Amino acid sequence: MLLPFIQPLKERIKMVFYPNSRDKLKEIIKEEYPNSYPKKDIDDVPSYCLWMLDELGEFDDSKKAARWLGWVLGRLESIELLDNERSREIVRKDVEKGFD
Image (tube, rainbow, N blue to C red; front, side, top):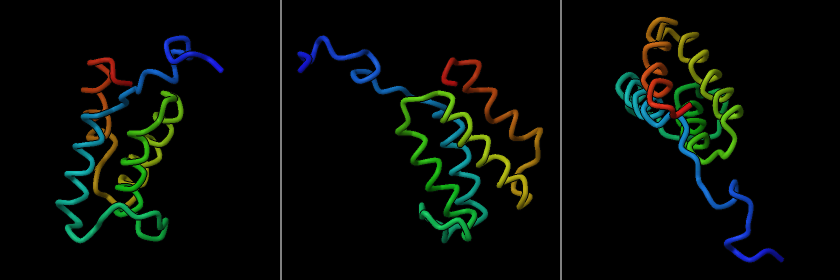
């Protein structure tokens, strides 16, 4: 058993990935779909995307967070809530601040 101060760094530090993107995407979804809520139901795209955005806030792996965010952006583009240019604009703010 490792002492708490010897635990691997990954276990001690909670990472924050794409906080601005997650907040903005949630705002956009709620604006267009006010009755949506985080729900693990892939048939309800807005609610499922809200659920995924909440989940990705808990990840400790930047590559997994990026994949999930990309999936959410793609689904929101597929239902014409965003276009690719808007998606890039939203994510760019986090990348510039080092939250990717």
